[in-house]
Image: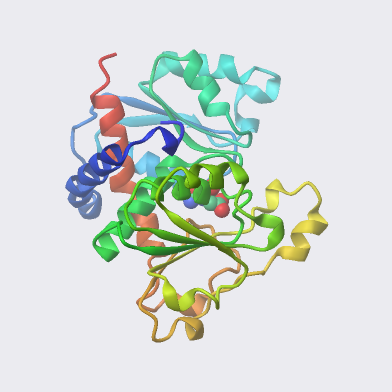
Length: 302
Ligand code: NCD
């Protein structure tokens, strides 16, 4: 599972349906035996809270276990071992690999050299397909459908891998419009616009939230990806460009989503309103990642 671009609509619907079936186990904090005896490798070369913890929770609720590391310093990569050798080791120890790395393409590279399923948990400014599946699960659960929606993707559209994957996935649905809201320096890359041009999705690039807030079902806001800036001065100029607060939302019929972590994009006064769907979005990671693991590991003949 490297890029959401490899998915058809029916693949996405399959995972979302499977996740719905597993939601009870996730919610009631039970454990089943679906993946009893299976071991998942978590290879996190880049920091993570939600993605790593929810994969860990997902495999444990399915009756399996996990091994791994949470930064390059705690693996032999810090001694100079290649990523390829490290991946080969984990292939020998486990049934699937979850990889997060600061460079785009690393999960693809690993998937080409190992024989177990590989899941991209975020590769640089590239893709984050499992986040997209839980984002779509949240939209479907909260709004009832994914077709016929107007969704604003806001913030760092240049470096944000969650919005790259999500934009690609939304292109598979019907009668959709997306507003791409960013400062000029952080616009959606041409490659993704090119992908969108090949679908029926309508998109519009704008610079202010005020312009679109009355017209959308979902505000999907993202953090400016500080770690991807070569010159920190460029980050300082842009940070704080978009902030949503309770007052802006009053009277609107929409939901607010965020892949988290948030820095200052959503004022904490939104947390206790009906608009806040970002915490349940984070919780939805467990049933969705359970569905992903079940699909890839249980059904894998190896
Ligand atoms: C995102 C990521 O790592 O790309 N976080 C996540 O997985 N929920 C978003 C981010 O770091 O801004």
